[in-house]
Image (tube, rainbow, N blue to C red; front, side, top):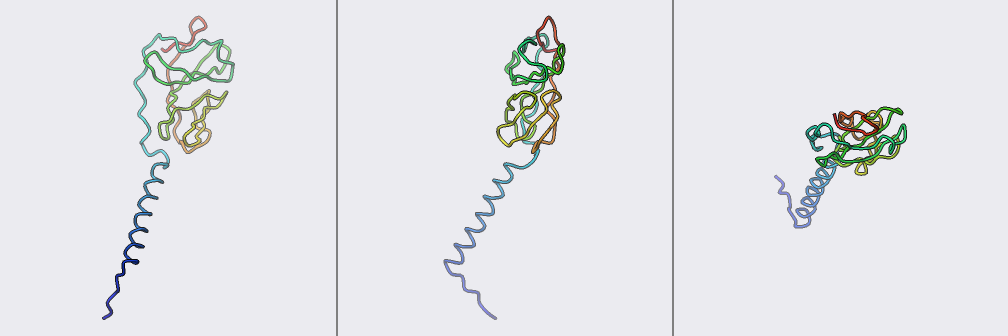
Length: 144
């Protein structure tokens, strides 16, 4: 029977390796795909509040704004007379997306969304942005 020799060096090396694996696992988990840690969609905004002026949004593009109760949203203009709106909270990890013409960019992990539909164009996000119901009334985009 052979006795294994436990030196201080062996114990410290093994302990450092285990700690490194644990830290690496935590770091990777923080950047995982849609893990359900993204912020839950906020309640629907109150109806009738103006969130944008149609003339301020070029056709085929979008702009970032807030609802009357402070929810971050993106309003886009698919055609001359229509508007669409989406939550500005990324479905991957809950960061706020930024409007950039026809694309919505998430600055945290690089997800991209179609500004006119809310659909994912590039991951890591896999779920579209939740829509916010809006209508156009007298040239203004209002919540419905």
